[in-house]
Length: 494
Ligand SMILES: Nc1ncnc2c1ncn2[C@@H]1O[C@H](COP(=O)(O)OP(=O)(O)OP(=O)(O)O)[C@@H](O)[C@H]1O
Image (cartoon, rainbow, N blue to C red; front, side, top):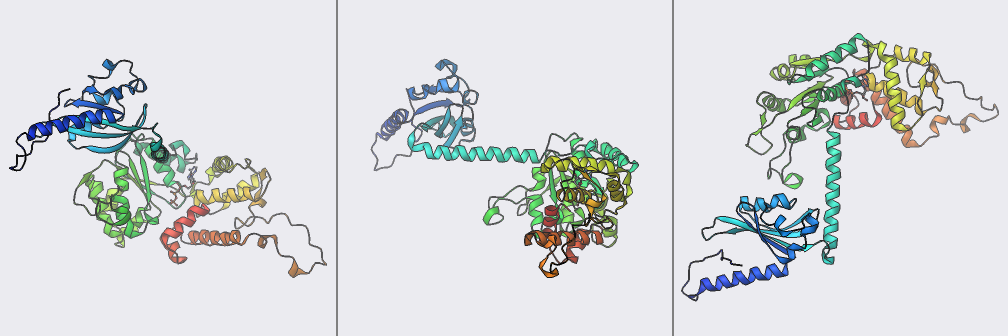
């Protein structure tokens, strides 16, 4: 077929006069050689239309779903070759010298080059199949690629599942007046697009409500991205929220990465423990809320986004504003739609329903049989102060279930777990002849790691109760970092 050389260097005195002919012949023979040596070759015009395919390429047509060459040649490449990047090569004028292409016909090593006229204008492209997956030397490479692709697909699927809301408004169990009011407000704010501020003690269900509000909002099909500000060291928080521009850092962040705001674009960002936001970052957050724009770390390029923010805190934000620890302008911007989530002690009527729903959840997740609570157990649970609220209630139920095989749990099953629970039924009396020192209580004859974990859990629960769930104060009291405290709270389900 006719072929025009694409290079035309200025003739130099030392070069032969028939240089054009030499170049034309070189290009022609290279073209013929590639058409023959490659597994397949195609030529495209400026409009992405396939104008010619080599004999080798014709054997791929059945696998691509075509019986006749005429069903393929003359069509735009993106319509007949899935996943091809040849159209981009024509539009950008940039070659892709070597790439792996996977579609229903298999996995191929391909090369894509733009074709230019003598003035340098792109007039089409040439696509080469250098090798296909049946070639034995390629097997290890293709298998590795297929494996990595599978892992990537799995990770993407998992990530999008995680970003789906886990709860609906009906997941907020309770029919007390206080619980009904929270659900009414949640339904109302879900239809609006303004910032929501959830205020309440630890474990009252703020995160559950954030998910539920997102699920009931027009953004439900878009991602819900959460970040716990207290659990991230101050020095990393800006990058975590706003991302890092390429080249801003060396090491892992060299290529740059998106922050939570960019990931949540179109959806909702849940900022948990907003009261722990360092003052220095509060102004940057205020700007995003006001302008819906930000600059990633190390960049002065403004990124526009469309994100709805739901913030939550167990701290007294208005007191923090008065103490100069939280910006007043940010507070007013966040508190456009505030919802106070009541502590469990203000809705004791809900305890029975919560126990039922939490017990079902514990049985489902743990594989343990479902436990029923006897009236004296419900009465005992309803008397507690529950500084850790529903999370603490769940934890008590979980522990009582783990420590007994009984299907019915009475108040005695909560011995040692709650301050005023009656002691467990007395253990059989030990023989009077046994020397005391030789008989250790069963409690200390357990793995040391378990016993240490028990002590740790109790110390953290007590400190949380003492500070009324204030995690900053709890971390200070226990002389541990906030991040370590959060890890332990999650580990022990406190
Ligand atoms: N009304 C409710 N009905 C059923 N389960 C609830 C309810 N409220 C909270 N829970 C459960 O209690 C646990 C703690 O809830 P959540 O994490 O939403 O609390 P939180 O207020 O965000 O706590 P923190 O301030 O410590 O982050 C979760 O397991 C949640 O599913």
